[in-house]
Length: 410
Image (cartoon, rainbow, N blue to C red; front, top):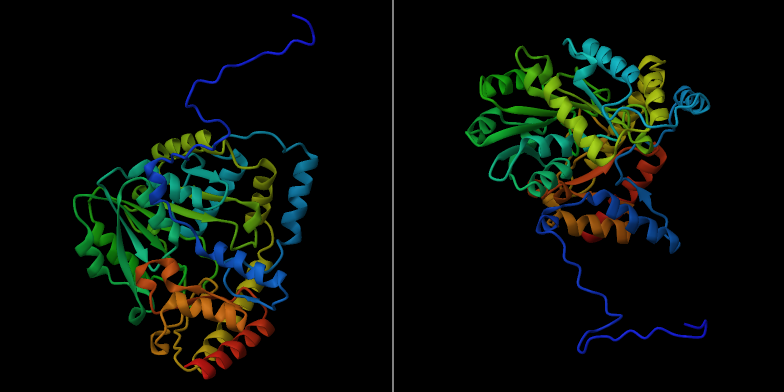
C-alpha cells in the first residue's frame, strides 16, 4: 500500500455516529445527597463576581490560618522526604500520638492498631457505614445533623432513622425517644457532640443514659467528636469513656476544626482493632493513604503548643455571644445560646417564611450567606444556620443587614 492510500471503513446501516450516548448511572447514585454549604458558597462567590458585597456565614471552617508551627513541621517533612506512600492505616508515628492523645482526653486505653488516619473526617463516616450497614439494616442519626450521615446511609441501601434534636433540650436528643427507635435491625447509632448545625452539646447524663439504653445489644456507635475542643461551657463527654462502650464505639476526630486545617484533609477514627483492619482495607481500595507530610504536621499539631486552639475558641465564644444577642433583637428570630462548635441555629418560624426561601432571600436581597435548616434534614425546617467563623465586624454588619431586611419584609 502506498503512502497515498486511504483506508475505507464501512459503517453499518442505521448506526449513528458522533452522538453522545445516554449516561447510565448506577441506581444507587440517585440515593446520594450533597452538602449544601458548598452550593451556597458557589452562589455567593458568583454574586461577588457581579460586584455584590457578600458576608459569608455559610461555610463551616475556621477563618484563621493554620498555626505556623504546624506549617513549618510540614515543610520540614517535605524536605526530609515524606513525599511517598505510607501505610493505608496511617504512619505509625502519628497513630502512636493519636492513641496517646485519646488515652489522655477520653480516659481509655487505646493502641496504635486501633487508629486509622484518613484524608478528612468524612471517610470515617463513609467507611463505618459501608462496613457495618447492609440493605434493610437501620442506622439512627441526628436530625437536624451533618447531611453526609443521611446521604451515606441511603447510599449503601440501609434505612436512615432520624432522632430529632430538640430545641427545648438545647438541641440535645431525647434518650427515651432514642430507646423507642432501637430494634433488632439497628446496626449503628450516630452521635455528634458538639453538634453541627445546632451547637448542641450532649451532657454526661445523656451519654450515660444512651449507653444504658444500648446495654448489651450488638450495636456500634459512631461518635463524631470533630468539634470536641470547641466547647464554651462545660466539658466534653465521649461515649467511648463509658465502661464497656469502648469496643462498641468508633471515635471520629481530626485536625480541620481544631487547628484550622480544613484544606489539609486529615482526620482519624479510633475503633476496635478488628474493625480498624477492615477500615484500613477500605482506605487501600479508595485513597491508598493519607499524605505523609500532612501526617507529620498532625504530630506537631497534637504535641506542640495548644495556644492557638485556646485563642480560637475564645474568639469564637465572643462572636457567638454577639451573634446570638443580635439575632434575638430581630423581628421573627429567636436563638438559643449554643455551647459548642462555631454555629448558631436560630428559630425563624415567627417570620412566617420557610427556611430555604428565607435563606435565599437573605443572600439575594441582603448579601448575607446562611444555610437553610433543611440543608441538615427535615427537622431543620423553621431554622437557619449561621457560622460565626467570620470577624465580629462582619457579624455586626450581617446583623444590621438581616435586621433591615426583616423590618422591610416582615
